Image (cartoon, rainbow, N blue to C red; front, top):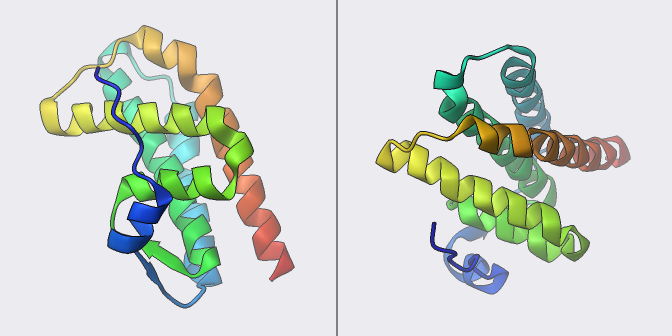
Length: 148
């Protein structure tokens, strides 16, 4: 897979991000949906034929959590890549996690638009990383929600 550079936050602000009212209720609902999806994809034992669907499911969980984070900041994105760019801008120390999410986004796009089948080894290698990222994002959201 070719390694394309993540869109800059500046480009995202110009082209894909708009200001909206901070929306704690929407963030809470997205958090609940992400938790439901995460429990579904992580607690069920899927066979090797379903790996691409599980990987896609993990991407959806992370995307919903990033969207919730934007709503808590009063921002809305019309572009998934800008969700990742937001994380990179807001939490520069999370460069490793940002790279994992961006790689996951590219794989998810290959699944969705090219019918790509993910090998079980990819999920075996990365599932703990995905779970760690999800746990970390949830903590950030829950902390922001508790602060009001």
